[in-house]
Every structure is written in C-alpha cells, then in structure tokens.
Amino acid sequence: MSPSFDDAFSALKKAQGEFEQARLAATPELRDPHMRIAFSDIYEATRIANMLYFNVRRKGITEGGLLTWAKTEFEDFTSTLYMQYFNRGAYSKADFELEYTRWSGRARDYINKLASEVKLEQIITPVHAVTDGNLNRPVMNTNSLNEGLQDKDKYETSGTVYIVPTMTGNRGLIGMKFHDYQKLLALDIKDEEVTLGIRKAKYGNEYSQQIPEYKTQVGLYTITVDGMPKPQLELSIRDVEELKKRGFNDMEEVSISIGKLPYRVPKQPTASSEFKLDL
Image: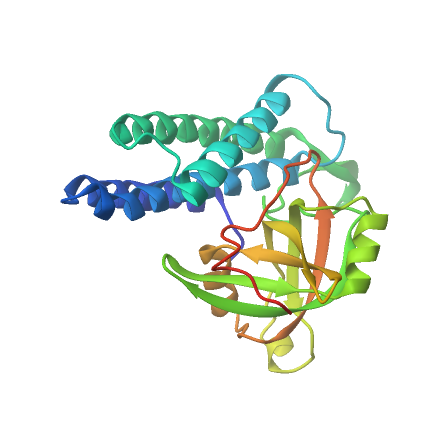
C-alpha cells in the first residue's frame, strides 16, 4: 500500500516504544541506541506527512502561510532529528526526556496540520472539468492522496536495489551509473531529498498481479568510485519493508523515476563508514 497519514502516526507510535525502552536502560550507553532510533522514527513520521502534503500541493505552489511553515519545519526536522540526533547522536544526554517530549509534540502538530490541509484540498479542489453523465459540471477530486509524485521534470532510469543490514534494521540503496550522474546534474538534481517511484523492470508474474509503483521520498547522494561519480538513493527501513512486500529482492534491477521537491533539502549518507556500497 502507498504511504498514508496513518503511517506517519504509526511512526510516532514506534518512536514512543523506543523512548520507553530508553527510559528503562540501565546506562547511558544502553540508552543511546534507543533514543537515536526514536528520533529517527519521529523524523520518518514528518517525512511521510511532508511527502503527502507536497504531493497534493505540487501544482500551483505559492509561498506564504502553511506552505512556508511546512517547508521550514521539515528542514528543521531533517537537520536536527535526522542529521544531528540520529546520525551523530548529538542530542542532550542529560535532558533526553525533555528533548523527546519537545520534538515528538512538535512532530504531532506538524502531521495534524498537514493532514487537515490535505483533507480540505481533496474536498474542494477540482481535478479537471469532465462530463458527469449528461451534466457538464466539474467532478471534485476524490482520488487517493497517494496518486501524487506526478511531475513532468522527472528523470526516468534504471538502478539496482541493494538491501543492507544495519544495527537498526534492513536499510537499502539503489545504485545508478555515471551517465545518470550527468543527466541528473543537467536537471539540476544534486545531493538532496527527492521524490522516487520504483517499478518492476522486467515483465513477468509481477505485472499479472498488478503490483503498483512504490512512491516515496528519499535521499540522493553521490559517491566516487575509481574517480567516477555515481549517484545512490538511500532507502529507509520502511521503504525496504514495503519493497519486500511487493516482491522486490536484493540485487534486483528496477525502473525508477526521480523528481525534484518544490524546495531543496541537502542530503548526505546516513553513516558513510557503515552504509555505503562501492558499486
């Protein structure tokens, strides 16, 4: 299934579980992994909400109001929760309970506001004018919230899925080639957060089963192998779980569609020493 706001709240629930484990830990060393995962889960919740909101608002985006607030908030979630707290463990160890309460509450407000706005957009925004029976009148937008990621400035290519075991669970990478690096630069897509669609690359039973395209938001970054830059897409634990449910496997070639977000969030690898493949 495509992501929904229920998934965002589920991620917050997972964060709460990790936080409870952290509070029971006997030492700071045992507490730290739980807190880092909790902060990562909070970030994941806001990432899902952010993706769903901007999928609906991609057309006719204007600055100001909720849009500007949503962009600014998500940039803060990314730089603080993901880059500093999860990646580097740079949160206040003495005030970990206060830090968790502050960020989880802020994330919940963020998700609630965006969910309310998306619901309103789906009710009042016409998709286009079509005939409804014999009456010429606009048909209101009742499509799924997850039919987004439709943008003409996407880059279509292929890549290889790699599933990477880590301390926190199975994460993933999609490796691409040097020519992809050149074409992405031509579209001004650099090391940043991007939209991503993943489809089966080859015909077979998957198509008869009507496996849908998996759509998400991921980090794109570039590594250098033998002096050649090669782009990679970093998949979260949840992304890997969803791909496995759809029948995608490790080392499988896939068709992918990469698109820009309406704003730019710089991206670096989660943990370059542990989570990088020289493809």
